[in-house]
Length: 286
Ligand code: C5P
Image 1: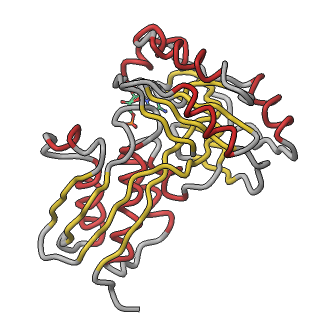
Image 2: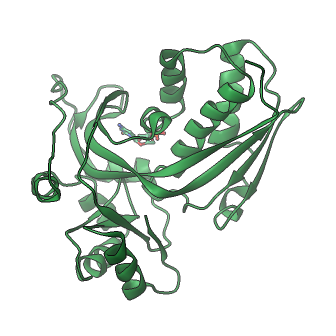
Image 3: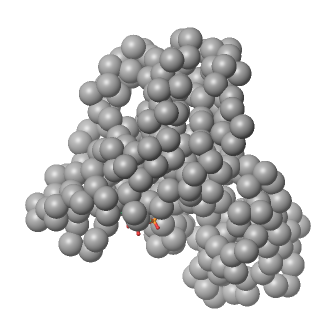
């Protein structure tokens, strides 16, 4: 197969339907267990063949990244090139549709999309295991974003069990326009260091939406409390989503501040988006 002249990869928003912190590890990272799904909303990454590595950013949230001399997309490109022992030649275009530092893995999804795109653009001989190791070195959420399919995630983010079938549901994502630092949220949580960390639980299975909601009601997001201390508006967002017609569950994703609602149908999710739209809030019925 010849290398392509240009390739495009979608970088969907990652949503943590649940997120349990099992303890802090001696390396400072936290051992997590999380049910992760991917939304229809996302960024878009295009890679064109070129002699040098460059990046142009567009999209609703592009300006927020424009000042960064370095970012995860460029780092992912350089990392893959160095692993392959080749020049990092590619012109990258990132359409940044997702809010930045918002708990839905935008940067991680972009880094994962870059690895996938450049593997194709360069027709690179790199194994899934190599790619997963590179992904983890870029960030804890990057490995799950490589596959971008529903998964039960364990550890720092590197143990991923794919969930084959989930019942149908629709998501509404709402971000109140405040950036929240993941590191700050973990620091506020102040989890104790645990010497003997539990091994991965078996991935749950759900045959109906009721079963999924029941499991989620018993398995929340441990980062929601500390994130609400940092950004109290998160409580307002959850209350607003929870009050919409048809909402089955309202919760925060990742370390926030993006929150989500679960609905039985896309129509209900879209109706909820219309009902709670307000200036400065980003919404996606996804
Ligand atoms: O890996 P990533 O750069 O996305 O993580 C950002 C920060 O979040 C880390 O520096 C760490 O403070 C915290 N984190 C953690 N445990 C995880 C994932 C992230 O403590 N499993």
